[in-house]
Image (cartoon, rainbow, N blue to C red; front, side, top):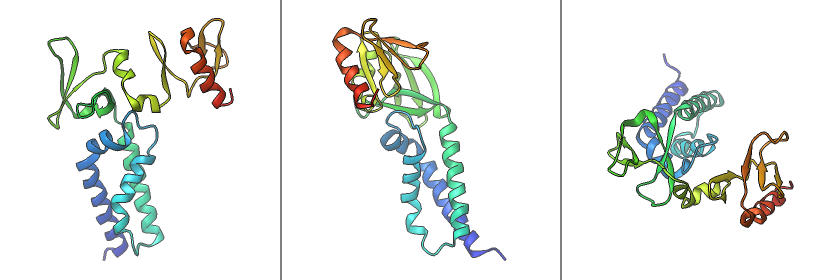
Length: 196
């Protein structure tokens, strides 16, 4: 005879799997993945909301099995390769789509790269720095346009040399990005907030 809690776990896992299968792309685009999923936390929150109504009365062992299964699904979800593209539903925003869900890639008349997705949508690849400049979510992830030729993730910046107009990302100053004089005070402010 099959353990009833195991049956519940199987049922819950079926719910999680079908919900993930049905809404992974939509969820990816709309909620957790407005840029790049850096942790499974938001995806886990969504899964939790899906399964919460079904969790009453489950024993600790079953909940642990379910938690392990959900963690495995999140890891599998995050391991998939993504492409950063313009959101066709929200002009100026960037989203990620899974590469394994792209039917084919070609170029339009203006030679812009277009990803044709299995959901029927066509996604334009971000082609210039201006595409990134219009994205609020890109800004929320710490990126600032500090020169005409770059965007810098100020969350990862470690130091700034005002004389040279360079921001550094490690102690050895091996990686550097240029900073225009007009943006130096912005960078200094960002670093000061972080105690650097």
